Image (cartoon, rainbow, N blue to C red; front, top):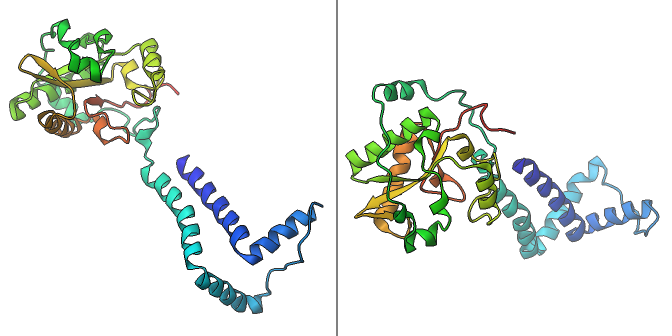
Length: 269
């Protein structure tokens, strides 16, 4: 859809610039307007085939005399179009589903060999500190019930926690797992800086997404301004992706602590 919009913008912008900057374009516009009875300019006709080369040379001379204006017009057309195409990707759409029909069979087989148990719940006061409430003000009411997560996703997430601790020395903590439709709409009403997804447009509603952070010295570390935590998020993204999860750190609106398991046929349209 974004590509179609960019293409339509490109065509309209090119047409508008041609009619505004080029004498032939202005004459053509006048002819069209005159045809509907509003006003007329001298009749203009497309050059015959034999004179097309001469017509093109005149246009090139005009462009050469107005280089700055031509460059500005080209930038006006190309920059928004290229940005729209370059920044667009399926993951930007809340309802996007991966083409993967089922979770990767090899990863699922590895996880079946060791059934991991959720870690002990953190004390409720850990989610009410000043640092936490500044970054995630509504976190205290979030669900951290591992039983509400889809079993395959839960095992992948627990495996990510295990790898982060055993291999990298980071102890992970679940901030929010399952999210009710009402809570999703409430968060969406707070603006795009919180979430762009409404109810049933987030994998949280299906127990297939989780927001995580780090536990260090008896405190939750969420802030990305902490170099230690930022290094942890990068490692977490690599581990999550190696387990077949989608990591929010690669999105346009980056969410470093977010990971989800996209399963075809689950997300409602």
